[in-house]
Length: 201
Image (tube, rainbow, N blue to C red; front, side, top):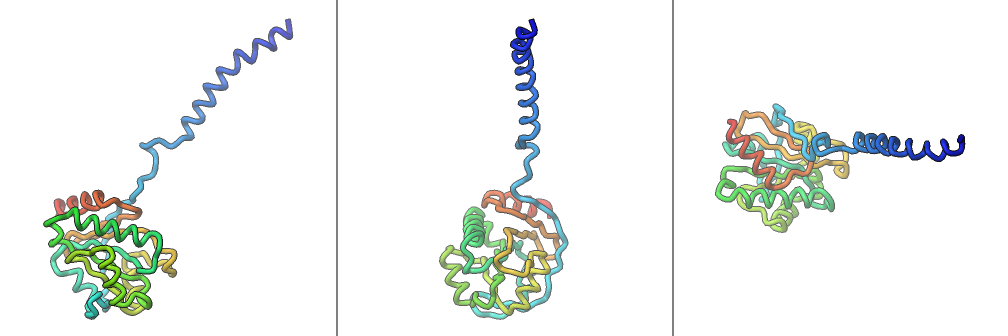
């Protein structure tokens, strides 16, 4: 009798254990609804410092003046010798500019080097040509101090160019708040965010 009960008990318990195990796995597994977003979006009132940078054509310019020419601004920070995230960010900007079509004339794409000692205007021109940057997309270099000041103003300075992260900034017009996109946004997502900013202003 005792042996027969031992043989029966596993049959009664195993289904229960299976159900409990399935519930545990289901509870532990992240769902699409609870997974963190690939791109984190925030709205921030950054103050643009009046630092002097140098455009890819060799012209010294004021960063604040370059951003306040009336166009919407889409900004990132890159360096030309980067082999991982910078080429992807730059390709995304190139595709974004193409997708804008005729609207691209109203958008100022800006890429500021975080390695100004290596990124001369000539090197930036070559980099821009490599990624087929269209009119309205400008690259900037300058002194180390000016580059650091620009990075700190947008809270992306990490002290080491190899530690930089993927961030895109958008502003619909001078004086407007900035939209910060942390993470790899697709070109289509950039277009959507740009249109949302323009519609809201």
